[in-house]
Image 1 (cartoon, rainbow over the protein chains, first blue to last red):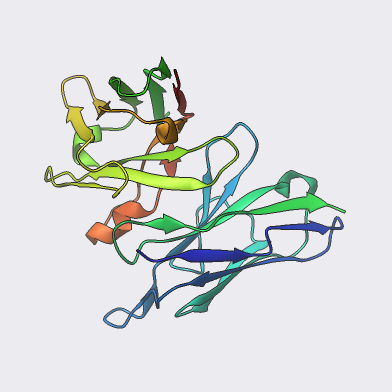
Image 2: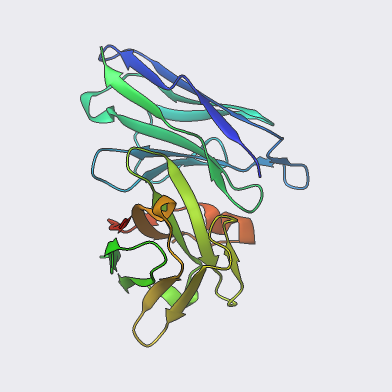
Length: 113
Length: 124
């Protein structure tokens, strides 16, 4: 199974500042046939199910604010919140869907400093 | 409005069996690839099982041989039959799917619609 490892486990960022979460896969999740990275990012607030933010590593889901962006390729990926808002306090997960079983990172908790 | 509602969780003794249900509205379970995922208390997300529209099914290693995914088109409901339950199966169980058109089977593992979850506790 592909192991997804996120860093850091938690971070505290001031309102309006940038938050950066990293995710590393144990093997490449880039399909050469279509040049796509099979990585998604989710946001989970307490007591709620996860919400899809990003897929194909960098494609923003409809309705997701443009302060959220994804980047990376191969084995290294990043979720960036360009200007942290109070409503962004949550746990964020990366996920690979390159192979079965799909696997998730351990999560990164984002808080306000 | 598209909605998935899970039911059937509760407290069950180790070795017991339980069936979870996921009722869909505004959404057809038989024409979408449907998954179950779970989240142990205070822990991360774990995919459990998928049923494709063509009826192919796949399971996580941890549940293979004990859990069975199925659906009832007439009830527009997804199920997860869980047997020989263990303490480590304790979790919130979510049903989820991809509403956007799925081109390849792997895209079915991108989840843009989730239920609110149902809690299963396996304990004596």
